[in-house]
Image 1 (spheres, rainbow, N blue to C red):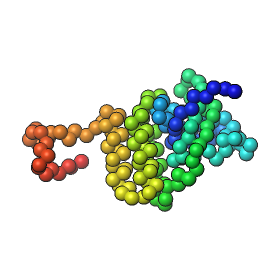
Image 2: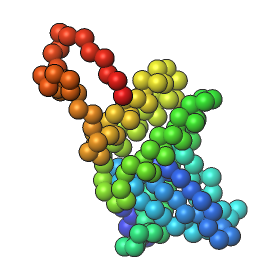
Image 3: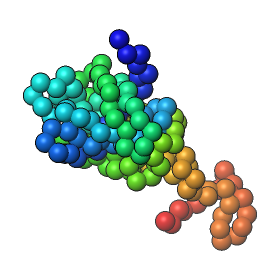
Image 4: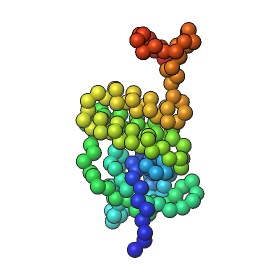
Length: 169
């Protein structure tokens, strides 16, 4: 048997490739965002048929050194991560943020954990706006685009915890 180096990950995006394959973008805990060729996964007899779905925790293995690697194994321990109603769109929004903000092959383990937390919040459907804003803010900080909230830009004085401020985007 092949030795497997399984990584925790989530499917971010997929597109059909040829007759039975997919090109998928996954976000992994240890490697960050990775593009993979999933050969034959659309065939009825594929052992991975139906596993590659968004918002489901996956364990994956792949091989290759080019920008498009080859998926060699995928498994899931859960199949009940269904986001209720409109929260599905919020989940796709998170996935798009990750696709466009996270560079390929750069690990962002703290963003991975924040993504997991946000998915859990979307699953329970409480405080959706707050969950999304927290995720966005943490993603901006992690990728070097954090908001400067230490100094009042009008006075150039440090922010006082006892004072009240208005943030005008």
